[in-house]
Amino acid sequence: MADAVDREVLFTADPDSRALALSEVLAAAPGASIRHWLATDVGWVTLVHGWSDLVASFYERPPIFCRHMYPAQVRVPLMQDSADLEALADASASLAQRLIPERPFSVQTRLLGRGWPFGPYLVNTRLAEMCVGLGATLDVRNPVDVLSVVLTPDEGFLGVSCAADNLSDWAGGARRFRREPDQISRAEFKLLEAMEIFHLDAPHEGLVLDLGAAPGGWTRVMRSGGASVVAVDPADLAPVLARDPQVRHVRSLAQVYLPDARQRFDVILNDMRMDARDSARVMSLAADRLGPAGWALVTLKLPKGGVTQVLSAALTLLRRRYTLIGVRQLFHNRSEVTAALRPKPPGAG
Ligand SMILES: C[S@@+](CC[C@H](N)C(=O)[O-])C[C@H]1O[C@@H](n2cnc3c(N)ncnc32)[C@H](O)[C@@H]1O
Image 1 (cartoon, rainbow, N blue to C red):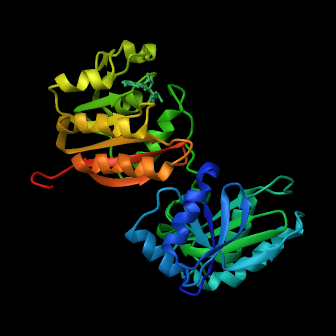
Image 2 (cartoon, rainbow, N blue to C red):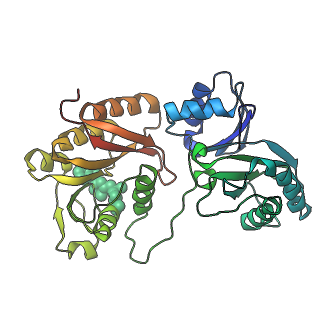
């Protein structure tokens, strides 16, 4: 397990948002300083108060842009040759005492740069074998603790922490999904990742409103769950959805459709490409259409400059009509973040 004296921390963010992620870390861990960017998306910070304080602070105020983090308890010099593997295995042996048998673990490895004589799978397997030999319990599907490994061409960073404290269950927060044969758009991954992160289930029946639906990836995901969909978009839907009697395509702008809409929806989705504040205003128009046990997701596009101001204005608008479940820049978000919402309970201000 990680503890309060762990002060070296590696974190990951989208390269375009890394400055914002760093400010989140610095705000949560006063006195921390950036040592080095190990890659465009991996920062190395030194804390003053230690890992546990940073984790507690992020539980209280979850970050939006910082995707993944772990404490680097051991550093190993590397040469990018096959001897590295044994050096890493020896380093993992010194960490194995933190892996208690009652808390199953897995190993997650990221290799930065090119020219590695081995891949992440081999590192995972060798280090897991070493730790299991020393009494740890391996469970790659459902680990409580994670031995995280990031390798740069000249140094390896290893650390053990509780998986739930790392902000993501995936190495570097890189949540990848397998492409499905009937997939309509890459945007589907964004919806799947958001539902996983915010613990939202696709309804097995009922009605979904998909604003900015074309070409229809999100609509397809909801249809495969079992719900019917009202898909609002001036653009065409994929032919398979256009033929589907459980999909009603409203060829209109969301702002035109919503004021006269009368139905109640179990889920409202909004992946419209527009200014984040305008999108939040559209969500305000949609608020009365969401059933009391429903949930909503909205993609908020980020501007080139003034991200913090635009995002905070959009979130203020959303909070007027919804309870915010969370806001994250997902692995599948590009220049945008995703907000998850629930209806405000009756009488809430
Ligand atoms: C990123 S795409 C949505 C992709 C979709 N989620 C999917 O999985 O296939 C954005 C869509 O928003 C639509 N859009 C933009 N402004 C809109 C508006 N005011 N009302 C309705 N749709 C809008 C665009 O026509 C475009 O099809």
